[in-house]
Length: 383
Ligand SMILES: Cc1cc2nc3c(=O)[nH]c(=O)nc-3n(C[C@H](O)[C@H](O)[C@H](O)COP(=O)(O)OP(=O)(O)OC[C@H]3O[C@@H](n4cnc5c(N)ncnc54)[C@H](O)[C@@H]3O)c2cc1C
Picture 1 (cartoon, rainbow, N blue to C red):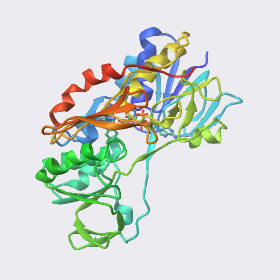
Picture 2: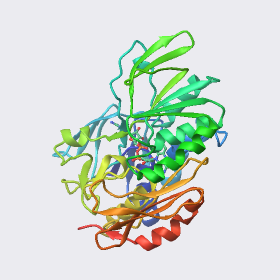
Picture 3: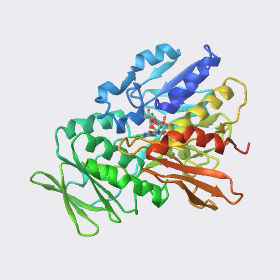
């Protein structure tokens, strides 16, 4: 019997197998991944310093133990080059692998912004545990770190590094922190608490050049300013890994297009996690992955189950000023309303029917996220 083959050993790949095993211990499953297959919590990459962990300390379960616990065939350090839908097989660096059904959970690549200068290629991104190991090796006791990008991940790294005693500069062309998810009044709440830790904010500009300097790197910004840094970290966003799916002729848009059953344009192929686009949205966060994994596991076990997403606020790991945000689409019709503002803000997004469809809670209000989520409720997707 040909196995269900899962591509990728991140949260999405492992979660769908774990959920499937709760229903079926026997169905053959193989997991193919190009990394070590060790299981770790990716969100901890941006607060590991505060947790006192290095890369090795972030591993929760070794690959071999995962394979044993889940009763799967695990192929690590194995890159998938192509999906042959006609023969239902994969071309990999470990040879051909046949599948009965295929689950694509290949994640996303960090976006790289073109930068000039003789040290442009030293700019780091941290998107997996191997990146993190490299980052920590280079970080050492470097006094100053420049972060390209003041979004969610950039702000989390800024808080973690500044709290550990590094001087941090955050450079972002946008107008305030996490501007893609939060309205101005909420985003600006982060400015003073992180500045008090030592974060130097540079909004409305970007890094044009990174050149070698006596004590590390010299950054030249688009507005002409110059900065020195011992290390440059890029956190400007992610791009879903769609190439394999696209080359196999599957429908793709920003991500691999799937329906409410996580099924792609090929009935035998599913996708979830950072690589997938559900109902027109890529949701690169833990909670959507967990809901998708539970629904998909049921479908794979024979009980067709569409995913239903509850309100899933994102918790931003900035202990200097905690944030929980349920964002709304850029073109959402409605308006942000300020409900409270004492040492933080509580804001609600009211849609055209005056229903709460988003919120942002900062500082002390962040603790109200579960209560607020209940007010927003669940969202069934078109099947
Ligand atoms: C620093 C950081 C902090 C975060 N913090 C939060 C948070 O606080 N809350 C939250 O909700 N979300 C957070 N996220 C997002 C969340 O961690 C991700 O949405 C989630 O981990 C993605 O899981 P995934 O399995 O889809 O992808 P990944 O974990 O990227 O897994 C992809 C897998 O595919 C494999 N792969 C890729 N290409 C190939 C190939 N060609 N052949 C074989 N294998 C391949 C990779 O090796 C990997 O195993 C954070 C992300 C980052 C980077």
